[in-house]
Image (cartoon, rainbow, N blue to C red; front, top):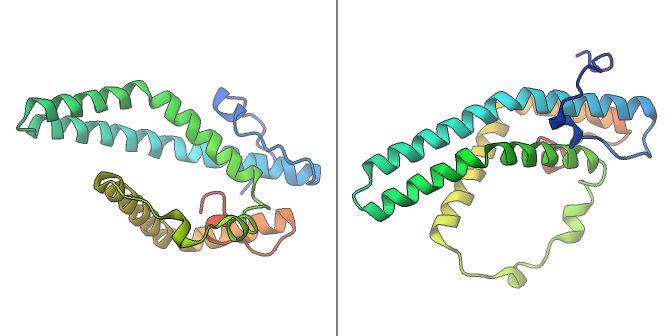
Amino acid sequence: MDVGHDRRHSSALHQGSRIGNAHWPARTQRLLEASCHQCVDGLQEPLRRCLSEFEKQLFAQAERAHHAGDQQDCFSSRQRVLQGRAAYTQRFVLHIGSAFNGIDSARSAPAAASPKPWQTLALVDPGEQEVSMSQEQLGVRGEVRHASVLYELGHRLAVLIGAPPLEGLALPLG
């Protein structure tokens, strides 16, 4: 992986993914920034395909709808997906950039910020629950499918920042 020599990327998408931690050495910061750019570049096409597939599924669901209200809801959701594609892509890039910025603080934050289970009780919307469960299943499948690559990435990033190997949520792409 030749991340140290690839400085051609100056796209507007990469502007939001700048690594802003000045406490790392300059070479480490350059390598982390190049890694972030490679992640963004590598995930652009899958993200585009995912949004296109989602838009097609909304259209198909609208075509199968029995009620005009359901069909209109699907078409309006599809329209929001089409209109918000660039904004969603930009938020995705910013999220990856912030994950790389918080790479060394991700290990300690979840333990300190987790509230007690009884403090977070709330009614759950069934649709929201289904979406949440689908996202969790998708994440688990991706983690299982790419376990060896994520393991290697965790070790490489840990060497760069001088920390123990990163795992799970501590990885920017975990």
